[in-house]
Amino acid sequence: MSFSVNTYSPTDVTLSFGGYVLTGWNTINIQRVYAGMTAVDGINGKNTRVRNNNTAAVINFSCLQSGESNDILSQIHALDLQTGSARISLTLKDLSGSSIFTSSEAYILQYPEVVFSDSFEFRVWTLKCNTSEWFVGGNLKADTSIFNSVLGSITAQIGV
Image (cartoon, rainbow, N blue to C red; front, side):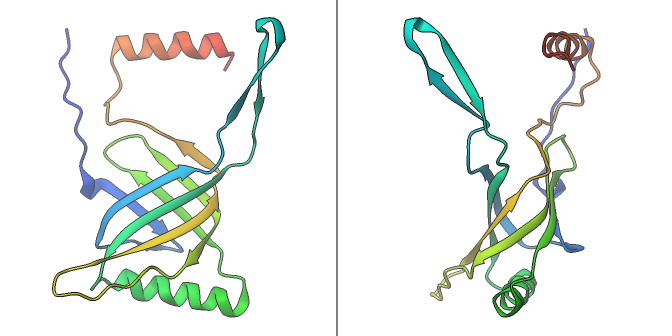
């Protein structure tokens, strides 16, 4: 019996856009805007589903108030407001796991709320994009016979 420990490391999560790797982030979240499938309940217990090919997603991330990322994001957004052409290619990846999300057409929705106080604050930026790659993985170093057996069974069932 093999024993493995799955390890998540936040320092291995990277969000890069336009060649710049985001620094000083606190949290990053990404969520699809639309469900991939919509259930349609039919009469007599016959149900079906409708596939939605819209891959739109929203990415929110908080940056340190003093971080250089705010300067870069502000310049990108200002350029977009002037020209309407500041599309960003981005990749969100967990280097210690297998999660990856990519887009070649992301854009900043708006400037973040700016709070000045007697303590430290974060700036929360919101990007919208259509994703070209979407894989929600774990941190399993997957080379076990159980994992390979389950994955093989699933892919055989769906015909991949």
